Length: 575
Image (cartoon, rainbow, N blue to C red; front, top):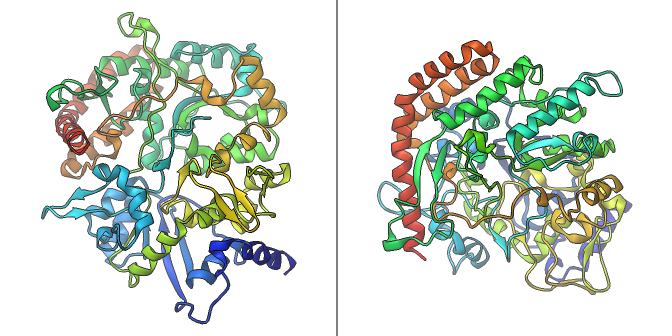
């Protein structure tokens, strides 16, 4: 009770949130059904942020999180014809859009009715607003991430990379690892010298997650080894990195092809075959569930993997909670050694310009009886005061404001944010992660009671200098110092400008669903076999794989070439 009174007292100081307490004209209480296209845990009944949302908006949430296969789950829900109010399709959101499950948000969002929401999407409206079959402007999902304010912040790698435990780099006296061969050579040498951890548990040299849509861990590395950011399942040859398109014709600059069936992909899978036969890759990795994968990383015995940092964030938190800092990971921007690509020196470009997470996040379903209330709630939650609450928590309890207007946390407060159980009672992640949000820099001063949060702070605590550097554990400080780096993003090259087409994985593949599904099916079935086969069988099996996948690859590549050019034109023509 004391704790809850403390929260209300603190919030009473927030000028714009003075009406948080229930008013006489409070709206009728409702409970929204919510589906998240990712695994997750239920918040506690007394979660303080959800209580404040309920008191302000009269809205409670009934969450359902993904269990099992995403596409099958969404297909079952579509077949039922009855949908949750807030519907997050995860990485298969195109299924629920094409299946007619979501309303057009432009019927509710406009500069006049929802100025905050409109200002949020307006800079990227050429990418976000599409045409439906009737030629009408449509927007089904306001992106959950990727619409930041101010210049890009790149202190760490949140997306794709080859990851390696810090202890492996420290063991080899902090080497510069830039290429695929250097990476696997180091893993192999470390594993030879250290087959088990201090408890006698065997190390896994390199893990590959293949479950469901997360098979990108198996498929995507090739484009990055070739020096490109994440374009999903295609490699786009960009000849002009500044994207100055002569004659408004991007066709030369954006030549698009599938990469998985090309000779340069063979080099990667042949290397994995070599590592599998050397004992670095466990056979079980190809049948491992996501939960098993996270558990393996969490116990500190997986030395390396290709993944995206957000995908194993819960494991990183578990290692940090256990103070196993040397078992947490560094993101490396590996490229092919010149020997694999006709002697060409490749630059890594893993970090891309700020990218709106197109068609990712909550949509409002056609079953929802109160879309206006949801949009109105989003509109108010985009206020500076609510964003501060959703990102940082309750002032005085979860963070503090310095005399010069900077946001900061004590060591205990920061430790709480890394604790998964604490977050279930004190953060609204299940809702906030899939909702529209501010990111990047706080652009204006914010009055919080008798204090002022100055412009120049960061919306996300993980980007705030005082948090990143002031509360960094001693191991990481010494680790960075050994490399002479200021931040963990220094292990990769600086972000490049975002291409006009965005990132090609965001393109809707629905028009070539059959070809695309078969394209992925062949990869999922054949690539593990290629990795696990005897080395003397590899070349013949590779040729058979290419022959099997080529018809689907050709159809998919032709579609993607046209789609990439169309996306580029759409953005360039609206500049």
